[in-house]
Length: 369
Ligand SMILES: Nc1ncnc2c1ncn2[C@@H]1O[C@H](COP(=O)(O)OP(=O)(O)OP(=O)(O)O)[C@@H](O)[C@H]1O
Image 1 (tube, rainbow, N blue to C red):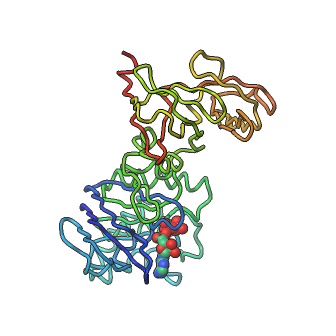
Image 2: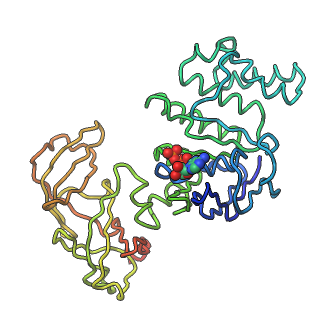
Image 3: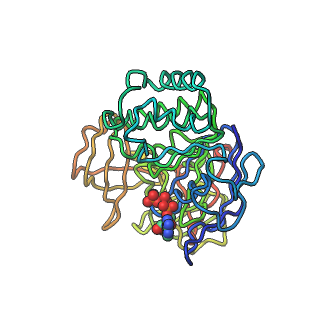
């Protein structure tokens, strides 16, 4: 088990800077997930930690020791790839044994370790099978098993579940999270699937264009996105965003007028200097309340009702060219063209200034007072 520290890490390919000064501390035993849009540098950062890419500038420390110039095999890490990278001519047992043999571990010890890991991962019936005879999920389990037998200080995962179908991905997600709880090993996991990030991470690192936008627990990022980028990226369906301008900011609250003409009171800390400026109002689909209300009421027409069983996603047109999504429990009776009344509860509204930076939301206590 180990801590991993990144200190102002940079990566330049030819003349383009891909990682632009990333600093981050990963605590012992923590499960950290890197997320971000395609090309933001997640894999590059992971590969730099693994030692598969040179670090152009900055320091990488594992357990306090600088490892920039230490080879991948000597960093005490094990990496699991999206492509599994199993040896096709070796059976499952031999795949798991390979690195242990290289490390000159005695045969009896190897056998003990492999058998224990195969049991944990339910691979015992397949030890004599070649990778080609296994399903995608089983292959991924072998790749994980091969990492575990080496007893690494840190596990690195690069989109390990993205080749699996949705059901299997869900199952493997639970298996990996359970495994992590048991092994308590420091884990760094790259994905572009934000459900994986939300459900597995102790800490999520949101990256964009080689910089960190925000680091926090899944619920911190969900409830307190620092800016518009994070607000858009975390949460599915995504947060509703509407252009607005501030018409008042005083002790009564902050009042904005939406591009749709609707006036909305928002429970953010009042800032008089923002009156007259353009802002963006954000509200998550599950926080829009259906039905009439005296507070921040609005009306619209259902464009599409996606009935998911327990939940319904209503796509609602609230004015020409402006649609929102409302998530509701039930809602089975609602179909396209139905008129709906809704409201935006002030305490659930987010406000982003003209630079896209979130304004601090009022604490619930002060709202009640
Ligand atoms: N060997 C390389 N030479 C030049 N540019 C590279 C190289 N490897 C990656 N890049 C560039 O670095 C950027 C980051 O790539 P990276 O693979 O880290 O992104 P990512 O966030 O993991 O994306 P994805 O989710 O699509 O895998 C991309 O713009 C990519 O084109």
